[in-house]
Length: 578
Image (cartoon, rainbow, N blue to C red; front, side, top):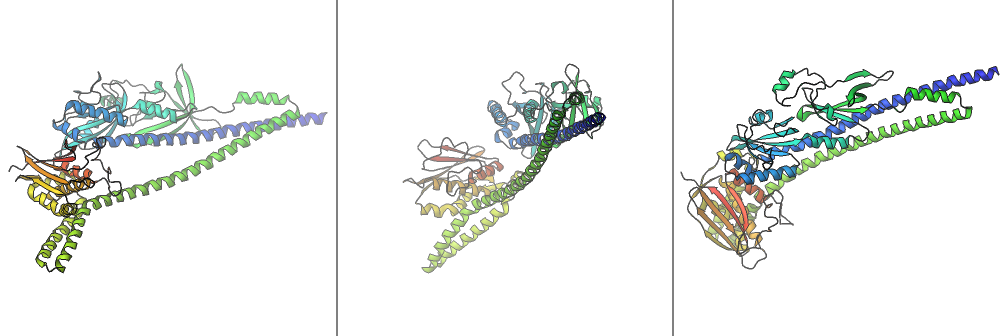
């Protein structure tokens, strides 16, 4: 009887020890997994926010080169049309507001022009995103909207006209868009997140009661400096009461924060950076352990009065559950390691693809610009060979001079391609050039193709000069003439017409053909890069390059269909009156 009592006593002591160790290990495993999960989720959220912000960051720089926006800061744009353009851009980009300001910070046009809180006429010169942009730097900023009273991210870029900063284009994205997305991405386990800057003010969170409170006092800025920045308008200082402590017996840092109705919740803490906005992202994972001490005591008390078999079965089930938990954790760690390696490989592949795309685009541009002079050289070489065979040495000599000029032209094209995107240098090289001379040089290249395809050429020109860079203007003419010849491939009567007219300040050159004309559904996109109707050999770069050249001359290039059939391209240039 005594031995049985001792055995039971030892059994109960051993059982108590096993349950205690099991409880400790389960809680430790939960703490470790929770900390790892918090770190993985904060990295995922930060990558998502950084990628979304980077996408919006590039939009103002692209809009600053838009022709209508440049006209808007110059005072020449249709106000209604410009407002509508900004509205369409905002809707397509997913932005809340897009608005254009003059150098003094006054809004000239805005996408919310139809709304009661329209920005038009408001002055935002006090905002740092305007002050940075008007000094020539693209800027990203976050603040509470002055008119809308909504939190938002602001992206701005200077609008340069004639080498001078004439305005600022700004794109605003509501914080609520990110809060909704990040709340969906953060899972369904009650995770919370906050986003705060160097001033420690919580700018974004999925907990409404935490927003616009200080996570803690800033070491860099006093509250007076924060208030003077007007980033949060008339916000009063309110520090979010939070406590940090070490979990007993476990190497885990726990944060305790308030919830509504005076409830305080413990969280696991992980953070990541949002460098574009100088923000810190914090993810808080609720501390909800699988077992707690009162439950353990109840289990221990119940097991003390259970039979041996029930106790063994119960212990076996606990051990099996623990093993399953370890197996699941190891499987997750292996899967995370495998996914990380796959992500690294995918990133390397994207980098290689980007490099190949850049090389391909440059090769395509060079090929398009020199293809037509090379075709003309080939025709002149064949012609010269036949003239030499027939003893026509003088005519062959003239062809050789022409070939020499074409070779020189190809060298100049290659040398100037890398300078093409620098508009400020191109504008400085503009000089008066006879219009007739440019057209004659272009016809030297496309002339053999006109004869080969039996195209009737009609010209009605005027004796005048235009301010251009001669070689690039000839490239535009060659491209338009070649496109017109190709468009008439399938028609019987092929007629190419060049007409030049002058006004007080402008010279207008039209190039029309008798082809099938332009597709009305595509007429607005023919000037976009890589858009082409030549499915077999077209690269879609010619018209895009031609329009950019014309914009660098402060000119225009447009396209339309003629009433009598065929397409007509209109080139408008400044007339030299000196």
